[in-house]
Image (cartoon, rainbow, N blue to C red; front, side, top):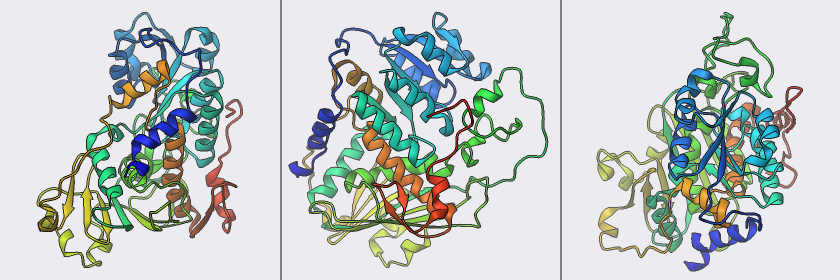
Length: 431
């Protein structure tokens, strides 16, 4: 158990990403820049600023979305363009928090890290697999404190799930299932070209993506379901659910990936999708198949497996979103709870926790910026998690099963996947 514990893993991460001698003392305040101030950006700003750190710069392309942040931090310098902000305030910024749409995660993060700034970036880590690798590589080269914004990862329930799987209580796990509900996605490109609202810098919002006319179907939320800007529900909510088996089963790069769903639309993400990942053995963990479902209804595939302990009566009104199938039993979980099944078999089981509680997902990163302490979702972990998630999208869009070569960053038998693995940037937005 100790050999596989997250404590040992965290120690490895700490050694790999120890922050250099230029770090501040724990009592000094960080000078922080925030890029993206609406939605998750507002939440990240509120939490991290609440620790008493210095907010020295705020950047957003939408004055309306950023209005509350500007009012709360009137002394912070305000920018529309993160490139100008980083160039002008290089000496004043210690770390950046990136909470922009998916297609503009990598550009500001990489630029900031190359300048030696610690980085917190919202999930999913990037818009493409190539971007994920670049972000992880730069973070490692610069020895920076990094954290992917999968805030559920800090929950105690996640730690207990990891301990349960690695304790062997349900036996070796060769099959796991992860689910998200809903049917968001789809749509056709608008033909209308309404004027750009005066509060929005549309060209800067597009960033590295190919130019297209403004339309409210893109901003401020629906960008998630347009391939040029988002990663669909897979990257939006799937990354949270898939984080649980990814951590508990000590996963990294899949061997094969295949996906199914409605006919592929060239511009928008599907309203439903299933993905099947195959992973090789890891240490004393056997090969495992991980199934992911994005569906408005419960996956029929699970009902077909004849697992009576998984029937609704076993969990009542609670709807688990992850299921581990072990040789000795099942572990059902969601983002906050877990249950061993059948309950009658595990009624007397008591878990002895070994993984320390998190100080908080944002606090982990702030502490790491100052002391070099580990973060549990640094860009090494976050890059591999996001890569796995995005490979589901690649397999779906390419329309065939992928055999994945992580060293070459290539689907060895599917040339059609190349353009989804590494995308073309608009001029003026280098990575």
